[in-house]
Length: 231
Image 1 (spheres, rainbow, N blue to C red):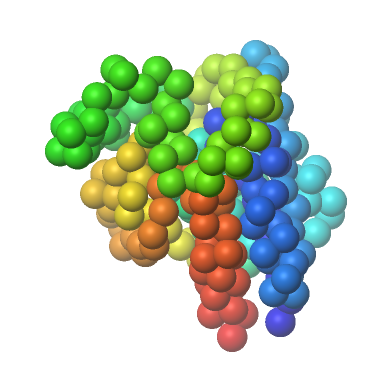
Image 2 (image 1 turned 120 degrees about the horizontal axis):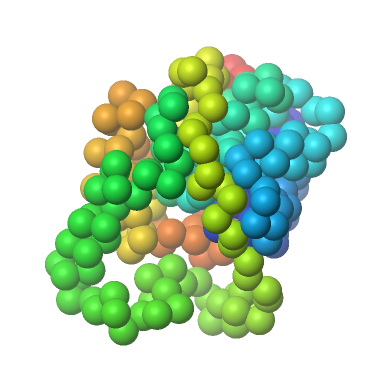
């Protein structure tokens, strides 16, 4: 059975992040819409990100909505509006109803988690100002070069206000965390998913930007999730 995936990127809001996965999903007989978000607009809040996602879906319903990293704020709200059949969070930020979005980092203990993981691995976060070693350590060099050649804009409008839903949407949800993520360490993701959703986390190899580093494996996992929901 063919599915349509709506792919929501993280910080920087670029549909390009998903370009390798789009091709892999197409090779498996699925459609995919990679969303460009208004991340460069300082006045664009979460509602604007959700509107952009819904508009990109082009009237499709029954989709599989996938949120990566910062896309975890947008994807659940869009999934509700799109009557999605499945929501997948990939190394994603998981908000709480009514949470001040700018407080997410402190509320979840992010800083302590990333610092502890770096110390355990013998990495110096201060020596990685562009986060190349944190984010791109397993991304192919040519893809990394292309990423750094592209403009990156992420204004803070997305962090204004509170997360708007009164409860997590009534959509089957899967949480996928990569085992080599240096930005959101897997133990951090497991704890946050349990505390906020009561869900276990599925694991797979890869770093934070898994759509760039392991697109075939990620597409295979997404297609398998969709297949289980449809059966």
